[in-house]
Image (cartoon, rainbow, N blue to C red; front, top):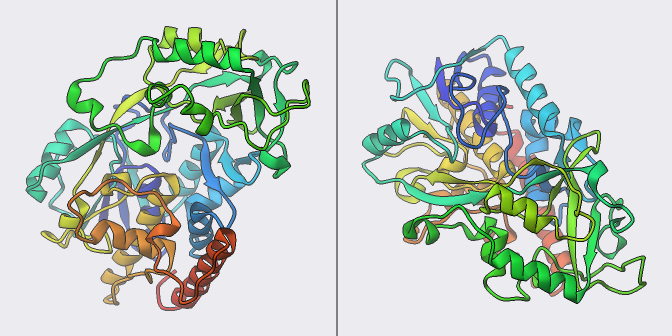
Length: 434
């Protein structure tokens, strides 16, 4: 019997990989008895920040990671593919339908028992325990983790973008297009002229926020920087970031906008859209006031306001090996963002690695250590290598070993790295239990 604590992306992927090999699993999920500050529905695998699983292109690091997971029969990526919504070259999902399908699939597996109960202590009556409680691990369980690891937890803060109703967007201003006219023109784009942008920027940097303590401000994760924090770094920072207008022509003027705000479809019905790159810690009233200044959003109805919440991760390089196994106690594994992998697909990948390793271990087979030339293997190596300044890591080509030949063109280089990784995954697949 394997016990998994946490029914998020990583926990569900781990449970699936183990159960399909004929091994019984107890999957503990505290919802609906208790909800974290960021969760609000009772299904498994709820996603709370963006609805995007990022690019599907192999020349994108996350796109490569998804393809590796597809080859390895990932349940979560399969469910994401089946509940995709238009998002150009990216894989975005209908949040509700995605989590509903994952819940249905997990419930229908005969070897998985779902137990809706909060776990505050690490079970000692199970042969193997997987801690996949995510970046919002409760204080009680965090204290238990500190006890078994002997290390203080590390923390950073993550922010989610607001979601608005499509029918309240002024499409006399907004237009459908993708940058450089690539993709399927799935994004709604709201152009700004210089005056509109500067007025918006002034109000944004002076808006009221939910105040953080000084130590919290130092721990904001760069990869999910709140839009108001980014704006305070300079008046043009946003125009070179999420509001970059390059590759767009405003159909009203025939010219490139001074800045542009993008909205991405958030459900299959295309009735709600999230504001891309607008993760925020502004007070709700201030979000309504300031974001309504964006051309096209004057009368926007907000389905969900952006929030900021505390995220926790362990010092994995000191604590875990490349299979996410705790060095101090071989019966304990960690999976998901609590290990320091950052992102939906990265969390799923960690759950895949943990699940396959538990299966092989219980069947007296070798550990599953993916080649570092694969994105799955590179992420596993990253969290296990000594690192005095360890921070959460997304999939990226920088963590893959270099090629034996020099390729100057970046896209061609990434394609070569991706081709090598896919070849390695297919070759390694035959050596593990799928």
